[in-house]
Amino acid sequence: MQRRSVLATTVAALALTVTAGLALTGCGSGRMAALHANCKTRGLSWKITVLQAAPHSTHREARLSGVNKGSQPCVFDGFPSFAVHVGKGPESDGKGQGRTMPIDLARGGMVTTSLRYKDHGPGMTPADCLVSNDEAMVGAPRDRHQKAIKVRDEKGKKTRMNICESTIWMAPPAERTG
Image 1 (cartoon, rainbow, N blue to C red):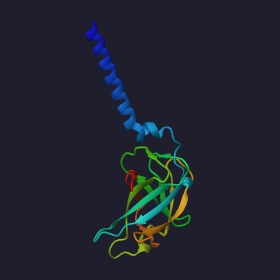
Image 2: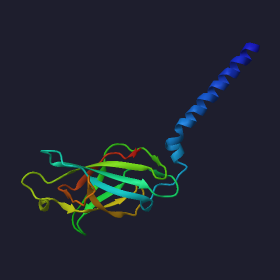
Image 3: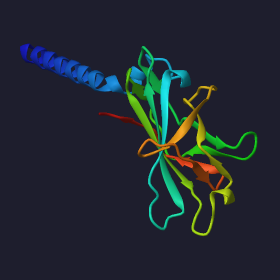
């Protein structure tokens, strides 16, 4: 009888320890994210950086980043909206590839998304592309508001995105540390 009581107490203590451990590791996950509001476009400071072109490639890489400037943490849940257009004319829209996970973005935290698009190739000029602009429209996931941001190169200088297709492919957003 005494042995069963000790065994039951040990099993209960072990179960409690495992449950507490799982709860602690879930703090940065979707469980904790459910406690915060969705990130809003106006609460994020946005930046688009066009990366240096790879030799002999017709595709170009860029990086979209957003920093939480709000007073509270927020949840970045999904792909951001992203579009480059010329006035009311043609436009290229961002389209996500892969699965996204909710990101619990602390105040000052940064989220980044890699972009890939078809650039003008050899023998072409930017005028031959569908869209060429030094500005892009961005928005937080699940927020209908958008914000215009200037396109920059890796050195911080103004540049243009010359996009020769209607789609800009986006990788799933990831939290950036450091």
